[in-house]
Length: 238
Length: 370
Image 1 (tube, one colour):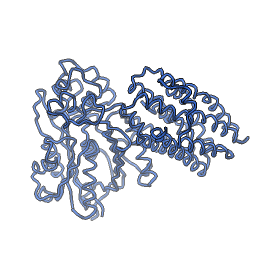
Image 2: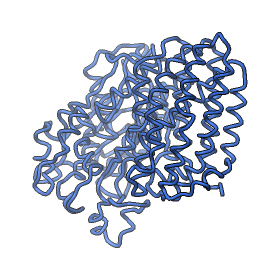
Image 3: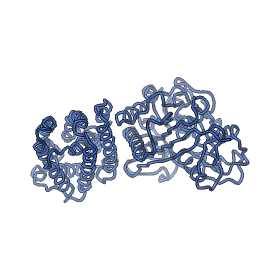
Image 4: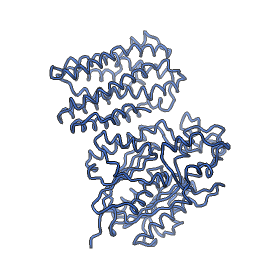
C-alpha cells in the first residue's frame, strides 16, 4: 500500500519534543494536502484510472529527469551551507546526496527501456514547474544553516515512497509492463525508506523553535506546490 | 441556539449471525465456499451481524420498515409523540425503491404528518449529512425538533445469485464488502431544548475530497470499466447486471487513503481549536474494520494527537458494519450501556471511503436545569 512504509516510520515515535511534534503535525498535513494536489493533476488522474499510456510514462520521465539531475545539486549546496554547529546535520545531508546523485542514470535507462530515445531525454529542457522548483531549492540551499529544507526533503522523499509503493505498479499495470522500465521508481523508494527514517531523526534536532517550525512547514508547502506544478506541466511541455 | 440529542434508538433485524453462518444466509457463489472470507473477516474483526434477508433470500423486513422501527424506539424513549415531530431527516445508501426519496417511504411507514422532509444520499457519511441538515434547521430556528434516521439493507446486494449473474469469476473488489457490511437502522431525536441528561451537539464538520481521489466504493460501474460508464448506459438492466454493473465494489487499493484523510481532518479541527485532544472523554469512530482502528490510532499517536485506547468505544464487532447507520447504532448503545456523565466530551468520527468524505461531530453531556 502506498505510503505505508512512511507511515510505519511515523508510528515508531521518533519525534519526541513538543516543537518537533507540532512540526511533524504540520508536515503530515502538508503531505496530505500534497497528495490531494497530486490527485488533481491530469497526468496523475490518468495514472490512477489506468488510462495511462507508455507515451504518457515517457513524457513523465522526461519531465522528471531534470529535477532528479538537479536534485543532487541542491542537496550538496544545502550540505555546504551548514556551519560547524550543524556538523551532524551536514553529515546526514551529505550521505543523502551521495546515495542519490546518480539516480538519474537509472531514470534514463527506464526511458530507453520504455521505448524512448536517450538523446531526446538528455537534451530535454526543464519545464516551467521544474525551473521554479529548482530555483527555489537552490535559493533556500544557499542560505546559512537552511534547516527549513528538511521540509523539502519530507515532500520529495515522501514522493519517492509513493512512486515505489503505488505509482510503479500502476504504470506497469496500465502499460502492460513487466517492471523492466519502472526501476527508477521502485529503487528510489527502497533508498527513501532509509532516508525518511533519518529525516524523522532530524526533526527534533533542527526544529527547536517556533520560527524553525514555521519555516520548515512553509518550505514543505512551497516545494509541494511547485512539485505539483512540475507535474501539471507534463501535459504542456513540448 | 443549542441543539440537543434527547433520545436515540436502533433496530437490528433477526438473530445475530456469526461468521460460520454468513454463507448459509447469503449463499455460496457457484456452490463453492469463499476463499477470501476468512482473511477479510480476520482483518475486520466482526464476530456477529444481522441480516434482513433469510437463507431463501426472502426479505423479512424492508429498509424503510427497519428505519421506522428504529425511529419508533427512539420516540418511545422520548418526551415527544410522533404527532409532535416537525422534521424527518433520513439517510440510506440504497432505499427499497430507486424513487421516491427514502425519507418519503420512512415518513409513511412511521405515520408522521405534515413534517418537513429531508433525504440525504451517499454511503457511510450520509447519516451524518442527514444529521447535519436537521441540526442546522434547528439551529436556524426553523424547526423545534427533528427525527433523524439512518438505515441500511446491504444484504440484498450480497445474494450469491447476484454474483452468479455477473459472470463466472468474482473479483476481489466485488467480494470484499460481502464480508464487511450488514443490515440495521439507528435514530436520534434532536430538540432545541435539553431533556434530563442528554447530548448537546457542539459542532458537526465535514471535509470531502472527491475532487482529489477516484471513486473507491461504488454500485453502478461495470467490472471492466475503463471510463465512468453507468449501469444506466446499458440497453437493458439485464446487460448491466451481466457486466457486473450492479455489484457493490470497493477499490481496496485506494482504501488506505481513508486513514490519512481521517487523521488530516482531526489535525485541521485541532488547528481550528474545535478539538482539544486531552478534553475528549469518549471517541466513537465508525471504522469499517478493526485493521483501520489501529492504523488511525497509530497515526494520531505519532502526530501527538493520541486518544488513549480506553476512550474508544465501538460495537462494530457485535452489531456489524451497517454503513450510514453504524454511528447511530453505536451512539444508541453507548448511551444505554456506557458510563458517561455531565460535562464529558464525546467525539464522533465517520470517515467514508465512497469518494472520501469525512465527518466529525462533538457532543457535550449536559443536564437540563430546573
